Image (tube, rainbow, N blue to C red; front, side, top):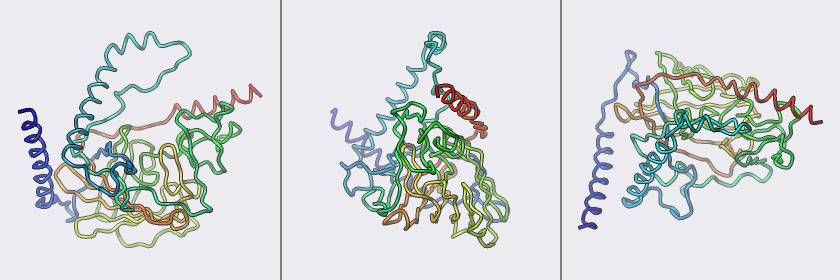
Length: 346
């Protein structure tokens, strides 16, 4: 009986997946007054799928039914653990040691996955789901969790400019700290592409006839993307978000971006950065597949950093909620204080 129940559950689960796929194929997309697919709204991009494919999956792109069931159970158990950890929060706050400033609680994170990704990795190309090899001369930087450039012995050894998110190469000047520590760029969102994450994991899309605006909740640099066929800015003008131009291919918004600053990595992750984004050409694809779901894909094309392209696929869910400002004031205060403390130690 036990195994019959499990078998029935897995069959039902696969049935739901097939039904969802069919529904997406039959979905008639809502359109704006300018007859473009309506992508307006606040979208959440949480996705617990690993960026790279774990070795145990080999070349397999999708989870099987048993693995999907185990993943869903893991997500449910994780939510129960988070709910339990939030219990007696007031008492715990009152008893925090005086030398421990604490951090954000789970109120600030969003773990729901209304449209779970059943892939084994976010990377779908190369086919093995792995980050391709880098060109021999390319600089990679690694920042272990908790690294701090002011804790001597824990300094990340890296060349300037610093392209990692946390840590740094010294406590001598602001530019030697990680980009997220400086509130300059964050590895989760719009730096320069959207990467799955459970923290401040929302974007807002706003459309007009000739432009699309994409604003990230984490970091406050909105991308304003022309759709009118104008040329890219000159390569002499470079920025953290690059120069973007968009167009519609059937019901998919395709955005190409180039001319990023060389202070940003071509592939910018939470603890690792690869090369420079100076020659990166980024192509993103936004497709509404359901009243409440959006498919998102991006391709990194940078032959001066990687031996092959990288394509990533994930999805987003529509939220009935506003975007809140992520002001990053703690970074503004903390950086000054760390530099001052380092000078006092010296």
